[in-house]
Image (cartoon, rainbow, N blue to C red; front, side):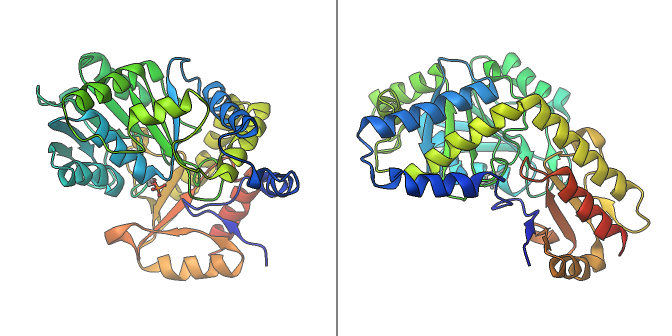
Length: 358
Ligand SMILES: *Cc1c(COP(=O)(O)O)cnc(C)c1O
């Protein structure tokens, strides 16, 4: 039976991936040199199309790394000399905070209960913090942070750098890049690609900071430090032998998404999310985990099913509908359902119809 993966990553592949994979094999691009013109063309296309789709300013640089997790580490390493500040509301935002401690930075956090967002009017950020990090879409709990309020934080603290994790909300997230210095994601979520590629988007201020730290003798890492990534990216290359296949597939899926248009993708995402939340809000026993509607993620919908979770997951799986378990303490009570561009309206309706029958 053919399965549909509503898991939050890896997830359902974007429908055109299979075709692009076959073309990649046939055209023999998997054997080309990563120092040659043909690869540079693929790199440049992926980078330029991403800028078009997400409306990234032209002076921002695009770096390819191995994962979202690597992007987190590079962020801390490259722009924090001493102190960072983190908004923590789940496992992924916490990972960034933990990494800063592991990298021997003075990291402080504002932490709220799982399933909640932040009271943005009342956030106190230490004067000495050099970097603020936020997780736009907390995949562990299904909480999304309003993009306007993220921009307001940067406006209130223009002297600090702001890093934003959009791993599970890209490309849906409508980020105003003027108010974000470092933004990162990986491709196995909203882009519907196989796992193994991370993307870091960096502005000149973040690059300057990395260069200043390096001059001061601070360790900013080796082959994936921002200045080295930048030097390579300027030649449409990567410091190491990269996953050419991933960068190629990304450029092709970006082409497909640009044809559909980001507005349409966002509208379709909203429409599918509305159906699922409305089902949950009207259900006699189950509910959406995130109560406050303004913090409800459109791309990761978390349902609290309590004792019925295991049974529901199994019945859905028998029908080829694969949904995610809860994260951490909610492993056996929550369902996490991805709503990415790879999931058609028909897929989502099929999932809801099957849930309705239970
Ligand atoms: C999945 C995820 C990550 C980790 O990305 P990897 O590519 O798995 O390393 C980081 N942040 C968020 C919000 C995620 O959902």
